[in-house]
Length: 407
Image 1: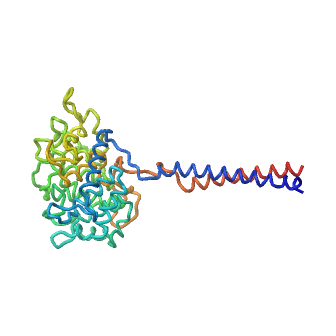
Image 2: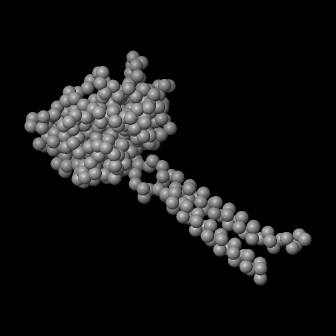
Image 3: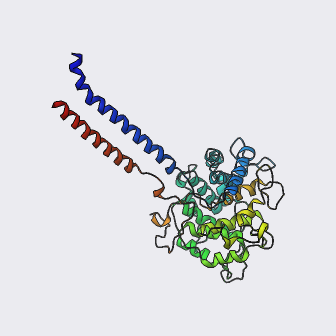
């Protein structure tokens, strides 16, 4: 009886073996697909710059972010603006578990950043949207708020978000034009475009090609600064506008002989260099090329090289000038640039979206290193197809074995 039963178990054994093989193959595919589908962001930052950025982000996570997830000022009061920048800094360097702490605090206290001087702050709402999208969360349901709807409600008929004056707490360094660029970056991260808002910003471009924080009247004279120009370039790129070539030429003229950029236009500093770097990357430039390298011999430096000169503290933080004490607020703003990441950190293609406030006919697209594409990962359809092929093979083998046994 035992000998007679044995042949009938062979097909089952073969089928089991093949099924096991199929499981192994599919598991392997899933293992391969896992990292590829993760939020990986290619970067132009050199290894040393990435290392310094990671160390600085670790300093923020380990020493600056409080036990409640917020960053606090010296008096102990929570600082929602720096908390948002810190979350983005950690995300930009891959400290994703750590970034959930400040992001979680913001989700629990959205109005701490969204409100400024008794009104909704476009820049504060933009920061919340950028944080939510960097955490791969919908901005329409972050902290129980539809942040996108609230942001759009601050838009004026001329396309400007917010007032023509600077809000005291939440406007980024650089003023109204910087705010408009930050808002466009946020809209881009949420898959939106706004032709009128982008037009407003383009029309405030200075004759020299850059942007200045004071210019809200397009007929007034102005002289561009690298920080405002960086914000504007990132914002235009985020909503699918081609960054004007003359904006890149403006940064070329503003670059200092040491390779950096300065807020006051004469001496390089960390914030001016960081924002110019981000603007260049958003515009499709590679700051590592000879075009952006200044000096000769041992003094030769790219903007990335210059940025590292402001990270001289052993803690890992950045200062505005070399050898100064580390500044948590400044450090959180500089880290994404040192990591080679412009804003937004997560940006769906705005030209392919279909939501209110969008402009599918915007001319020109700019692809940044922070944008991931579907070609970077396997799809579920591919895995199912592989499984179907493997099952078909199993069926054929099983049928052949049965026919051989029947003979």
